[in-house]
Image 1: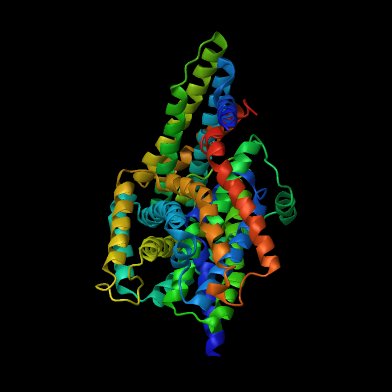
Image 2 (image 1 turned 90 degrees about the horizontal axis):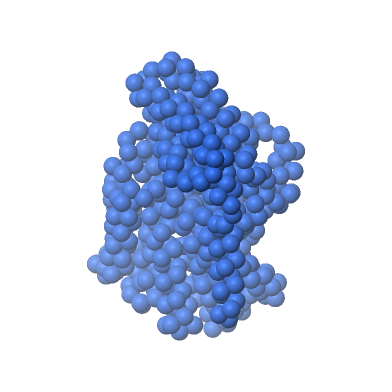
Length: 409
Length: 143
């Protein structure tokens, strides 16, 4: 019974934890501009993150070591450094976007400028990381993030023409004045949002923090194969809401207020309150995860003591990295750069860094020295290679498409 | 390798900026009008939801403030264009006026909501609808 509860809790946490500011903004933006004509990318992205997160979970359960630690050992310091730089910079950019998202949620609820909320949000992120137990912070914000299910309720309440939505979802092409280049650009952004590198680093480091062993493989796999796809359905619900309400009205999404507006239209003030708490939980939870991931990646690469189970005094450099990253994020946001714009760029840059993040994972998951008999089978490797090819294409196309479309305008 | 890089760069440059001055202006007008129409429609939706008591005044005020910034950005981006033919000058003036009207209506709503005057905000609804229609028409210029 305890085991079943643990697995259920893990799944619920994974659903709530799947959606972050990148998913919120990108899905809403894409739904408003393309309807569900890009919904297939979410499905492709969710399959990809499941594939590689499962590999990470297996590596951790079998070796007891996080993936980044093994990347350096298996591929050498130079390749490890390349992976570190790419993943770290994208994670830092994501941290900036998440802290900005927390401040924007407060701004929307209070009417007080987000720049005033931001130092408070950054301080709260640090305080929670410093004081709260790992399992507690993961569960509390993951479960609170489940409130975003309100988007699915809102979609039903908006009374869409389901046949029309299905029609859109099964016709992958640009519509209206959109052309193939913007379509491809936002496909890459959605892909980047679904497969953000920090998700796998946090997942694997979290497995070490929770001391996963071979017996925890079931928990790890259920989190991945049930929790992440259900999180993907949440993403589709967000896209569906803006597709139903904004696409016919010609409204483009550029602010967090617009992301939450469909829920207010469908469910009124109670819906708005729920969605704001959900957005806060999703962005705050992701801010904790990205701040921890910044610390994890550098500490694991350098071979420092790391983790929330270790006393801060013994893992001082790990904590210093996180504090520096949080301060950097705060200073960047204080320049009054638009957090939503940072989010839009962060998912595209994430797409660029994807091959550097996921190729080493594929290599380590095939090494019997680390995973024993649990190496990838032929089917997993075939899927892994197909996805790697997709990641390379997305990575190479991201910058040219960004230039051609002027950032998706 | 160098040749491939040079060809790629040239293709990107061609795709990203060239065309006749009239075409470029039409494209810029359509782009700005679509952005502004989006902000005007957002403002209209926020006022309608406030009237239906689906939104708090503060949240509606914040949404309209953001929309006002968006219209300003669209208008200033278009005003930086350089019309060089009589046709493009006419288009420039027409689009500038439509964008100004949109900006005025959205600003009036922002001021009304700041004063907790829902009635004054509601009075702007016909202007917002008209503005959105005009801007959408301009937005169709460059399909």
